[in-house]
Amino acid sequence: MTNELTVNELHLDYGTGAHANPILKGVSMHLQKGEVVALLGPSGSGKTTLLRAVAGLESPKAGTIAIGERNVFDGARGFEMPAENRNLGLVFQSYALWPHKTVFDNVAYGLKLRKLGASEIKDKVSDVLKNLGLGHLGERFPHQLSGGQQQRVAIARALVYNPPVILLDEPLSNLDAKLREEARAFLRELIVRMGLSALMVTHDQAEAMAISDRILLLNNGKIEQQGTPQSMYETPDTLFTAEFMGSNNRLPARVIQRESKQVQLEINGARLQASARGAGAGSGDGTTIIRVEEVKVSATPVDNAIELPLLTCMYLGDRFECLFKGEGGVELSLRAYSKYRLEPGRYWLQLPADKLWVF
Image (tube, rainbow, N blue to C red; front, side, top):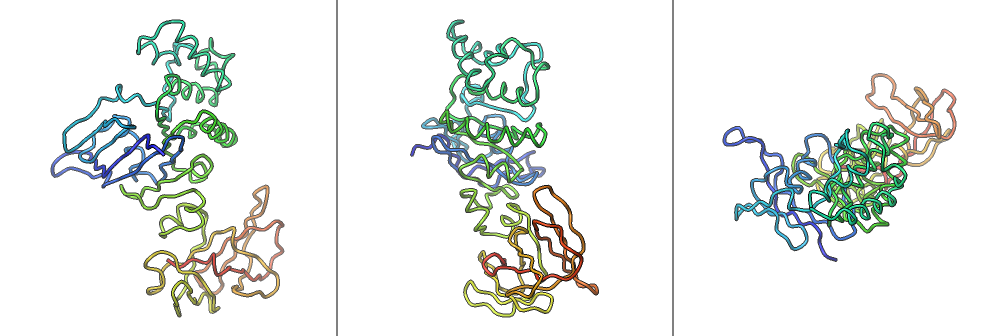
């Protein structure tokens, strides 16, 4: 596979001298042809800065960036290619459409700057609008479109000159929840159908998992972990990854014994088997977590379980989220899902050993 984008040991600071604030601290990544990579992480982790550095909108301090065979930034040589020469497709969070131009003219703008002929522009724009289901909207103005349609116009404008890489900065964050889910499916299908290589910034792990082939999780300017959405969710290497990638219960546990990956814990007076994850797991008490969906609720005693009273159940539409809480000042609360509303009372909460993780 050829790399469409290669970033090596990228360092970037905001400010200079004594006031320099390091934002990227040696980030390396690649994007292969036809691959979608999501840059995921909390606010301030450096994901948008990395995207902007690739686009040529931020100046790194050190490292290299290459698009295909072309070097576009080399810190050691002091070389930086201007943004407009990098030939990348950009989709911003705000869509950044010209309000006084029609859909057709918004999409054609980049081609006109590249001095293409009128008939070639017409063909290319009509083609990309048709591909995005916007063929009938060419004469409308942005304010006459829905949010989802405006978003597609922004994507059409980024795709019209067939760039090697498309960069998407939180492309779905302006849409309401229902539209986001539809747009997510549309975007994934479009990227695959057109064989695009895409780098997308998001802070929403569900969005990253749905759209991307690979996730790079950034934490404080460094890559915490990278891998397929499935590997990041099911086999996190660090506590940060585990907590960022899902909805979890944190449990106050005492490590009693450890043999390689098998750990014996005491939680709320009960002995439980758990699995060690990450390098430091099992040394001292560590941190014990389990995904909310892995907790099994039982009305009768079961293995590897703790007994707790039910506090409340919340209706979520497709299921209930139930909250259980320790009594007598015990700092223990557990969330679990149930198909039905549970009756008040005490329940056994089964915590499967392979899903009960100690970091």
